[in-house]
Image 1 (spheres, helix red, strand yellow):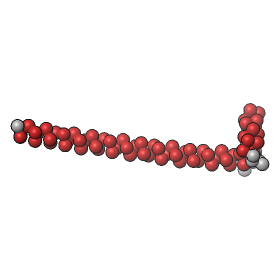
Image 2 (cartoon, helix red, strand yellow):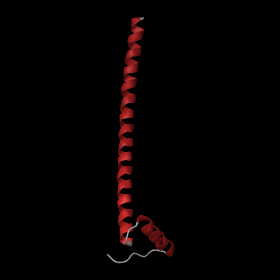
Image 3 (cartoon, helix red, strand yellow):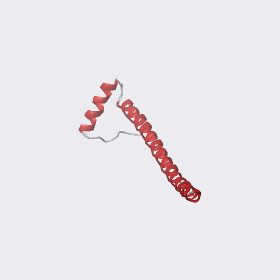
Image 4 (cartoon, helix red, strand yellow):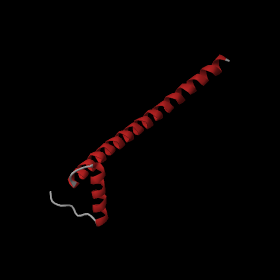
Length: 80
């Protein structure tokens, strides 16, 4: 792969990060950034999956609770 066109401001950001990370090359900064983005993306995907799972389980729990509540109300009424 060849050179990537970046603005002067981005070039300065890359250089600042290269020094801060003590990475000898700009490509090292890019590799570190990609690794971080991959981790963040994976974490976000897991968070989303957990959230969806909790939502589905909550819906099922509400339905079950409603059925149990209706059944117990009927039982309590018939015992009175």
